[in-house]
Structure formats: C-alpha cells, structure tokens
Image (cartoon, rainbow, N blue to C red; front, side, top):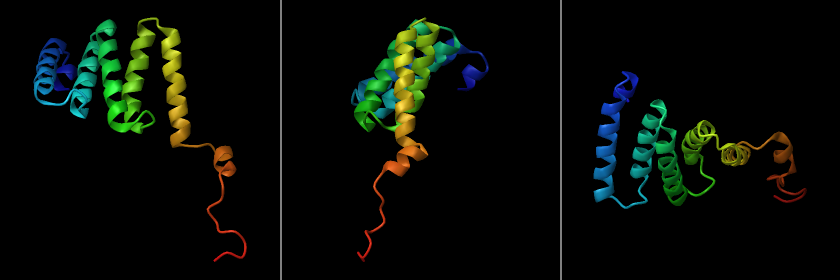
Amino acid sequence: RLYRKEGRLGDAEAILARMLADQERVLDPNDGHIAYALLMLADTYVADERYSDAEPLCERAIKIQETDYGPDSPQLVGALLTYRSVLKQLGESDKAQAVTSRLNALHEKLHPSPAQTDARPSREPAAGVR
C-alpha cells in the first residue's frame, strides 16, 4: 500500500505479483488469502488505469470469496465494488449494472428496510403463550 501511495505502482505490482505467486504455490486455489492478494493487485492495476488487467483478477477473487463465504456474504462487498468500478471504466455498462443490482440486493438483505422488517413474523409469543 505504501508503494501505491507513493506512486510507485511498478514496485507495488512486482511485490504483489510475487506474493500472489508464492501463495498460489502453497495454498489451496480457493483460499481467502489468494482472493485478498488478487484484489490488492487489481487495486494496483486500477490505480495505474489498467482496467483490463484488473477485471479477471476481480472475477477470480469474487469466485473465491463466494466459495469461502457464500454468495450473499458481506465479505464480497469490497470485491464487487472494485469490479463494478473496473467494468464502468471498460464501458461494460450492462455488466456494471448487474453488479450494482447484486450490491443493492445484498445491501437490502443485510439492512432490510422498515417495510420489510414490519412484514416479518413477530418474535413475540402469541397472546396467552408463556
């Protein structure tokens, strides 16, 4: 992160690519650490406006996180946001809109609106039940 902040994107990329390669040699292909490394490298590519290089990394990280945490996990939000940004930069508006819809559905599931909350069955016991 320090290299990215200093604008040393080439150095950051080299370190992150090496870290990813090391992790891929020793970890399960679906390990969350690999997803994290993929997203860090994707973020570096985004900072360098290399969106087409970032796209497959985001896609792979999302697949790993879906496997690890499930498709509706809040853990996916960061990867989905990065992916949506990349898609917008690439002019892939239909794909970006699909990711936005997924993010909205995930948000609604994690933070239901009052109308949805009111429609849920009450947890209060029925009258006369103790």
